Image (cartoon, rainbow, N blue to C red; front, side):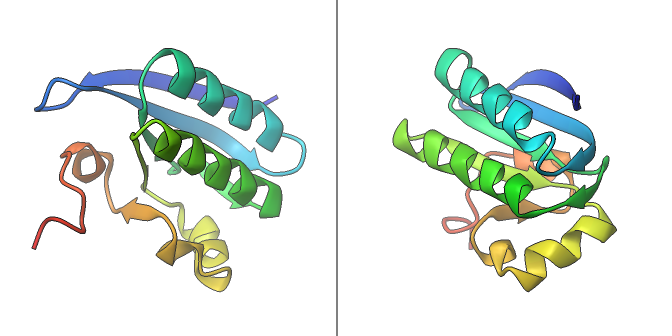
Length: 122
């Protein structure tokens, strides 16, 4: 069982943004639960998601797959999907798999919540 803290913020443009902060390992035993949580939040609450990974010290391919699926779900409904606070031990997995180029990754939750997609901010 994975513990996932959920918070809701309102962005400057009035959209709700859900911040999910899983704790522990995001691996083959927990990724499906996280995937379901992402689906539920995107379909029922908001298409704007920030995943704070500061408490995830291990992530494997199933964990990455759940994140990719969440990003696709958010894209389908013109939402946004951002990752913040990647734990140092998990960061390597993102770099090795080149997933750090696929996701919008921010140093802090505050930066991820600022609401300016990096591609536009220059």
